[in-house]
Length: 144
Image (cartoon, rainbow, N blue to C red; front, side):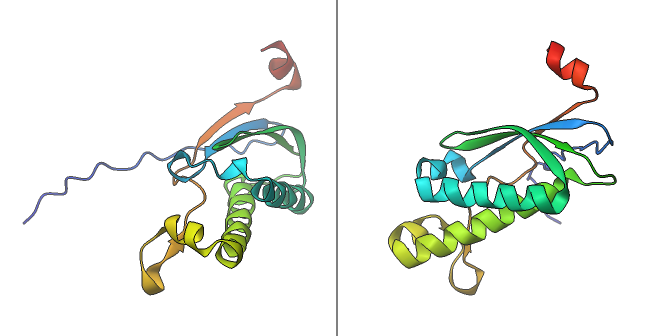
């Protein structure tokens, strides 16, 4: 019997508490500078706007860095799941940017894929939950 030598992945615990704001940070795959491209930024912002309308949250702040994103959002309809909000934003942005690269720069697209053939997958975001910090009251947020 072989011994499993892979480390278990850390699980991010999210606290979806009504009335809390969420400071979220997540990175591009292998810290690639995907967000140095104006087109990828615009696609991401379109998906962020779509998700804001769909999932009913206020976007208090955002910063797009070349290889990661910071969001500060406040869901105003309960119940909600932060993981579903992020899955929607990240998944749609990844799919659209992958399609764009495949059509306009197939060589670059191919270099960002993992797997081959039918199992080929374009990676935009680093796997894992990123960073999530709750702010329970506006006063707490303003004072920090």
